[in-house]
Every structure is written in structure tokens, then in C-alpha cells.
Length: 224
Length: 224
Image 1 (cartoon, each protein chain N blue to C red):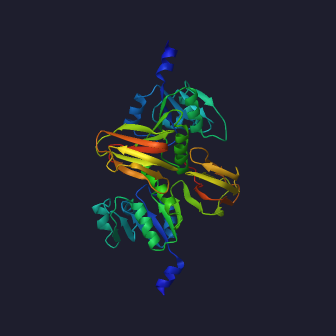
Image 2: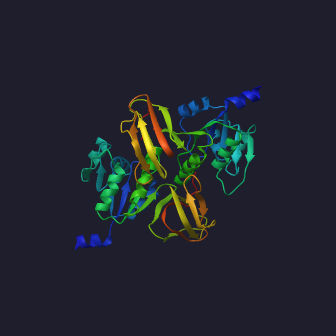
Image 3: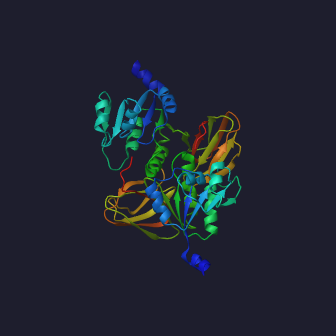
């Protein structure tokens, strides 16, 4: 029965990547929402430093320090060597295999820019397979993917900054509840972005005809 | 004569954006290479904190603190209000108007992810107008733009990590001097990236048939 229940509830995971983890209040809030904790290789060092014990660690396992290994003796280590996939890719692949429905991603930002770009690129690659939400100190990011016209709804607060970006081009964007509405317009990489739009009330909707859009909702906290 | 000389030499600028500035050795090295210093609005606060006096500040001028203003009484303030352009866009536009040939960009990374993405998007937008180089603690980034087949050459050191990304799709990539060579292959956003390739010697070349590619060369310094 427990097994059946687990399948039915389609578990939510916290995936810890080897970047900068959010501050405790955000991290604690993420931990409250998840059923299991998975680290992408060196993310285990970040987890340990934050006092988090992961259930599973996936990857080359070449970035985990001996100190982390010593602390995580009850954790499952999944050795998946390959030069052709990053540890995050292997971890997301594992999450798909485990029928994870939703994953909160932390440690996706900070430090090396190429790692951050690659993390975003990988996030979009898997966004059709499971629901992914990036959490960092400054906001919450998600890719809105629509093989056909689809509407996405987000809870907001008045004045919340909402940024929209198309890597490549996204056409036919319609929004409601934003200060600068889009009415069937396009966003295109290196041509037009939707930086720092603003929620008017407690809900916005974003509809796209086809393609994908990265939506980043800035936290209430005043940031740098 | 001085005016003519200035036109002939096509000056290099340091553009300071409102993100995280690199550590002193990198910042000092950037300062040595430039003829003038331009800040994108709130970048002036970062400059002041690092002991740098800019020549010009461009933007809405709504992010400069009274303390910064008090310290920068000899600086030129260029008030360019507009809801439809970021301060970085206004600053790059100003650099183009001033016939700047090359600009080193600092403060492009760190803090809000949406700002970082927008900075990259803006960098590519202007990369056909002037030579742009992003410098942060972990590496040096540049967009390789080719309206027609073109080869780019970089000085490297053996083992240097070189990451290549296509926002959108870039076809016909040929490289020399890399551990994992590309031979007419494509890189595509959310499909295939070129994370952490490796220079074999002291020089690499990257040829692209058409389109653009973001190249990030990781510094020698071991990073997180």
C-alpha cells in the first residue's frame, strides 16, 4: 500500500546542484515541500555544509570530498560516469526514471557563469519531462513550455517583479495581470526581453502559442 | 591633433554594471587596458566601493546613492530616461555613439538571475557594434558573431576550460586545439552545449559558418 500511495502521489524532490544554495529561510521552505533529497555530485558538499542529509547522490562522484562521504554514510550513491552528460543532466534523468513529478532546484546559480548557463539549458531540456522550479535568494524561475497554446497561472503580490525571457524566439505571448501586458507579441533572444515587468494584483496568467519562455518571479525581499 | 589621435586609436572602455565586480587583481588588470570608465547607473555605486572614479555615468540615474553622488563630483552624468531600455543598453548605445572599439564589461554576473540573463542578451545584441568582453572572477566571456563564415582565435593555456553555448542554434562549428573538437557540428539551446571543453596548447580557433556562439574561457585559478 505504501508503494501504491507513493506512485499515486507522484513525489516531489529537492535537487541540490553545486552552486550557491539559498539562505536558510528559503532552503527550509523548499525542504518542507519535498519527499526526497537528491544531490548532483558536488551538490552533496553544499548540502552537508547546510546541514542537509540527501537520500541519493548521482553523478561521476568525483566532486564529493572525503569529509562529505564520511558524514553521508546512510546516503545512496549512484555512480553514473559519462563525459557526455553533466551531473545535473544525470540527476534529472534519474528523477525522470523515479517518476518524480516535480523538483525544486537549488544551487543552480552563483559561481561560474558557464555552469549557470548550462544549468538553465539543462533545465529547459527536462522541463517537458517533469515540473521544475529553480529557487535562489532572489527569485523563483520556471520554463513555460507549450507544444500547443497553453496558459500558465502564478500567484503573485502587487508590485512583484516578473521577468520573461525567450532563449531562441517565443511568439504569441498574451499576459493578464502585468503592468506592461503582452498582447500576442514575441520575445526573442538578443532582440527583445521582458525584464522586470510588474504584477498588478495577486495573480497573473501567461499564455504562449508555441515554444518556451523562462519566467523569473523576484522575491518580495529587496535585493541587490 | 589630440582629437584625431583619439579617433584613430578607437578607445577601449571599461563598462561597470550593477552586479558583482571581480576581485582586485582582475579589476586592476581590466583598468590597465582601458582609456575610459563608464558606469551603467547603479554600477557607479559598485565602482565607488571599489575605489574607482568613472568618467561617465549613463542611465535613469535612479540607482545612484547620495553617497556615490557626493564622491563623484567630477564625473559626467548622462540622464537617459526610458522604460524600454535597461541601463546597460543605454550605456552600450552611448559607447557605440562614442566610437568605442572595445569594451570590457564587469559586474555582469552575480545577484539577480534575471539581470544576468538580460545582461547576456544585451551583450549579444551589441556584439556586432563593438568588441565586448565580459570579465568576472571565474572567466572571460565573448560572443562570436559571424554574418558569414569566420574564424576566431584565442590565446589559451594547456588544460584551460573553454565552454561554448548557442542561445538559439549555431551550425557548422569547427575548432582546433580543443580536447573534444567540433567538426562542422551544431550546438543548440536546450539540446546540446559545449560545457568545459579543454584547450590542449596555447591557442585555439573556433570557426562558425553563420550565427553566434558564446565562448567562456575559465581562468587558471581553481574555482568553486
